[in-house]
Image (cartoon, rainbow, N blue to C red):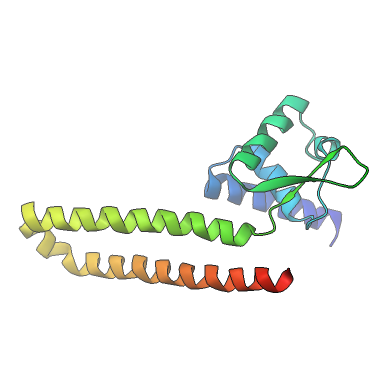
Length: 160
């Protein structure tokens, strides 16, 4: 992959992660750079050079990514530096977050449905079919995520 192509991909990923994870632009860029690097990891100084930002800004955004459990750091034997890298189980972590959001969505959707059945019967009858379709979508996606998480867990055990 050419350097220009890699930079374009980093920009696309950064914009996507800004929206998806509600990250600041610099955190999105750092995350994108780290994701494309595999498990090798970057030192703080390497990230500073790559993203061309101040030490405090890079530090703040790295800490944000660590707090959000999107990256981690490791040490190498004989080296005191921290190496920032993607989490090995990043897909499972991401799906757990989505699954949790979906669970909350289903819970609130059901509460709204009970409310409408009790207090807004005429409104409910006009949109019941759409609500049923949407709830079915939520439940199927929740089930698919749980199945995928189990598959990812199996691959983790095979790697160890």
